[in-house]
Amino acid sequence: MKFIISSTDLLQGLLSVSRAIASKNSLPILDNFLFVLEGNTLTVTASDSETTLKTDINIDEVTAGGEIAVPAKLLTDSLKELPAQPIEFSTAEDRNIVNIIWSSGSAQIPYYPTEDYPELPALADPVSLSIKASVLADGINSTLYATAEEELRPVMNGIFFDIAPEAATLVASNAHKLVCYTRTDVRGDSAASFILPKKPANILKTNLAKYPEEIVDITFDKKNAFFKFDSSLVACRLVDGTYPAYRTVIPKNNTNFLTIARTDLLNASKRVAVCSNQATSQLVFKLAQNKLEISAQDLDFSTSAHETVPCEYEGVPMEIGFKSTFLIEILSNLPYDQICIKLADPNRAALIQPSVQTEPDEEICALLMPMRINA
Image (cartoon, rainbow, N blue to C red; front, side):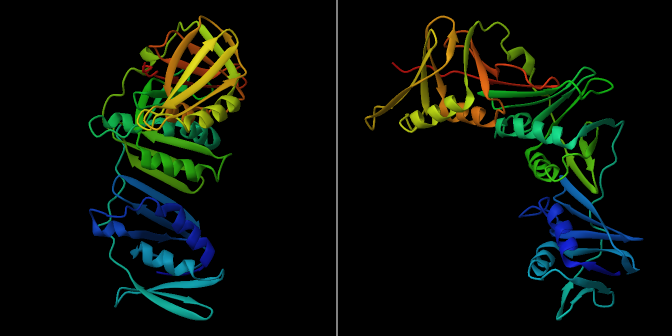
């Protein structure tokens, strides 16, 4: 293998896939990048056996192709110290050494044979879907924060993709809060679904931001999913299991409506939450006609706070408690200026939606379970 490439182009390619590499790998070969050079295309692969990232780098000056496995951290750290310039990258097969030559010096690092590097799995009866990168990124951003950390119920630890001929919905929940992101302009040929783990979801969230106008081609079966866009591929093993019937828990007949500016409610909740009980983080909403008072107290430390927030409230007077951390998370991630919180009673879930639907193809709703108010 021998080629000349810009040091910054190679480093950017390595960094774009390096997040797939785990800090501790079960297979030593996975501590390496896989380089495959065919023609003028260098394909760089990184993997932890469950999540695999690939990127293609175009190279103008190629003398010889081939494939090798190169220590990821060593190569990345070396390139980070180089100023932008052309470098010559060549292998000495008799010593299993990579020679890296730049204008004022050179370095030698080992490389390894590639036969132990795991191949991507073949998909069985795959389902395909295309979606704009900015839409997929919005869906992941709108739901990822609501996923759980449960060892006994791993299906709750990922984002559920529910695809139908009418729309596609991304769902995340930790049993205390639930978020649904629906796009009516994204449809499947038939009903299909999968659960995307957190690690590839976070990788997609970061990488898709660079290509908002690209189309992402998603291909998946019951075990794996491939996301292809620009010159990149994200492949991952899916969470195995059946996602709960989330639609059955979304309330349909909450008749008490609180309409309020999202940032006003968010900032007031943050201020009052400072004085909430450290164990429960409870906020209490006291609602009356066009009036909301938020309060919190911690009797153990003799702290309390309350604030009245301008709003429109139509419904019966009530007091309802929420965990401040969950409420603040939801309010921080909703993109709307005005929201409507629909309530039934102090013991049933609140539904949080935009007060006016401004995006005709997009719908985001959040569900938040209440807390029992301590006397």
